[in-house]
Image (cartoon, rainbow, N blue to C red; front, side):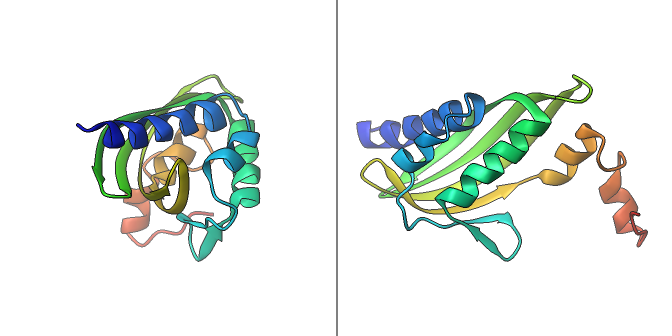
Amino acid sequence: MSNSNCAKTQLLQHWYDEVWTKGRLEVVDELFSASTRATGIMSDFAVDPNDFKQLVVAIRALCNNPKATIVRSHVEGDWLSAMIQVHTTAVSTAEEINATGMIFARYEGDKIVEAYNNFDFLPFFEQLGQLPEGSLGLLLTGARLS
């Protein structure tokens, strides 16, 4: 792996460690360009750096020190794709939570300028106790969650 490839992966891990685990919101501005819009986190909604800070605060209010680990990554040119494993505990119950996600990000220098995310929120919210366990199976039967 070239130094450039390592650098992008290390920058992304730094992002998760500083922003998500430590809650250092100022790092969003250091690693996101002002014009960056991250898509895929919420349907039909692109998250700008300020929105992202609010998302971090909301998620961290539900979880204790979420720890993201890059399980796999691939760099090609300015682009990094990575599979992420998140481990945390629920603030309300102290129960363990494990979830996965993926990111496809384009860098200019040390800043993310484009980001496409996919995070598996369904099991995340099941483990938090905010959705019934097995929600996906229920929904596939045509059932409605109320």
